[in-house]
Image (cartoon, rainbow, N blue to C red; front, side, top):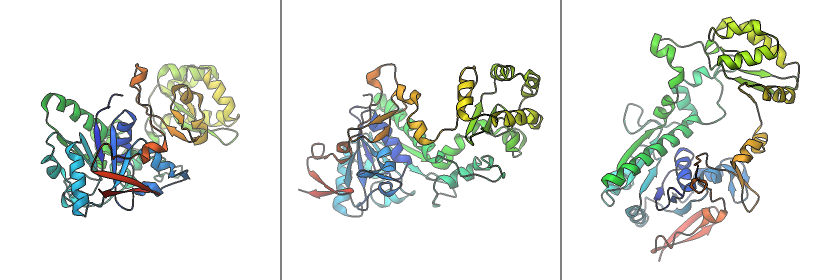
Length: 385
């Protein structure tokens, strides 16, 4: 496992930080999750399945967990001792809170100069919004991405996945791994400041053309990836399912339009996105409504065309492509988990997630001899010997 021997202290909760540290755990890092006496709120979010919610286990599997009340001197000292032997510390408090609790970067660096310390917050550690709370959808809204994610009524639509949470977790993961790589040569740790707002904005690079080049807001339904191209749209089928066309390269345009006898529409598609593609959109709208999704799935699969059926989550979990790649794994209790998406040509190098309840509930006594941990239903309680 690529991260074997790396110890991570995870002070984060909800999604961005746990998503980051779950990736590290999947690839062999020892992750010790430090929870407040009330536990990570993620333990109570979403559908329960066995001892945990699906939300919680998906981003906290393979971790050890210990409860510490950082407002208590003894517990704070215990955390600092844990951090003395840590490679990475992740926290997601509001800016300034970790330092006030006595576990900020400066306090931990004083005991471990090589530590890589990563803070994830809504707006980062500086700027006029630094004290302002925010969760994912607020940051998607402020980034402008929500303003081009429109429903049929042209009003902003709630996105299906928390992009700001996931992007900030991935940016944090990249930053931590870069810092660890540099530390191998220099012996010097790092302090990493990840803003969810920054991360969301960084994900908008391909849609900022009109704003950056012409200082104007684009008309979303006229742009190439938000409705302005017939070959990048969602179409309803006769059984009230949906299929997407998702590739605007000339070869894909020709392959499909030639196959359905409408080569006359090719030139409209080759002129780029915009209202002039309305006749092509109208044709596809009528065509796809004539037959069910299963028909179009088979038909399009036989062409060299970019497309995708709009699947339900149960359909996705049963998809043979994901099965072939081992992306959905089942633990000994019959519960499903999403595997790491990071693959390697060396089979042994791919993260093979520890899905067992034992991993979440494992004791850290052997790693920290001065502490014992006992399971108390939904969280760990630690006690001094």
